[in-house]
Image (tube, rainbow, N blue to C red; front, side, top):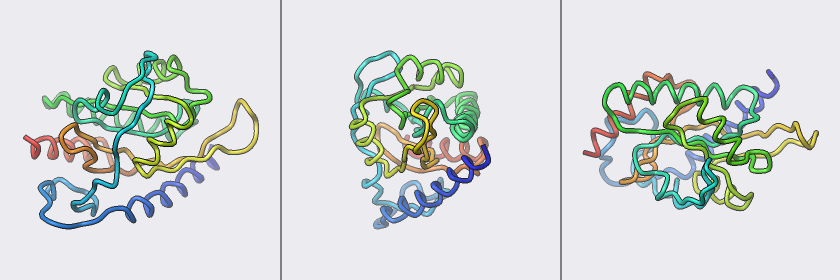
Length: 205
C-alpha cells in the first residue's frame, strides 16, 4: 500500500507540472479572490466535451452531467487508498457546501473501464455520497475525457484481475456556465475546498 501511495504521489507531481504547463494568463480574472492556485485566466485548454456512460448504464455527455457546480475526479474503484480517501474528502466538502445552501454535486470518472462497469460505479458512488455521479465508458471515451482534463493514468503490468493503475489525483471544479475553474490538490482540506468553491459559486451569480 505504501508503494502504491508513493507511486500515486509521484504521478501527482508529474501531473501538476503538466497542468501548469497548459495554464495561461491574460485579462482580468473575475475569480481571482477565490483561487488557491496560480491559474489566472485563459483556462479554456483544460476541460471540454466528453461522452461516457453513467452509473445507470445511460450514455451521457458533459452537458448532461455538469448541470451544477461539480467536483470532478478521475480514479478507479479498485484503487486501494488514494481514490477512497480523496473522494471521502470531496464528499465532506460537498456536505459542507450543501449545508451552507449551495447546490453542488460530485462526479467520478473511471480510468479503469475494463473493470468499472456501471453497476460497480453505482455501488462505489452510492457508498460515498448520494449526490455523486459515476461515469465509465469505452477505453477510447475514457482516454478522450482524460485528455480533455490533462490527466494521467497508466495500468501497471501484472495480474490480469488485480492490477493497479497509476493516475493523477487532482479534483476539478467545473460549472455549466464557465467550465473548468479550479483544481484542488490532495493536501487541500474539505473546509478549504468548501470555502473556495462557495466563493466561485457566489462570484458566478
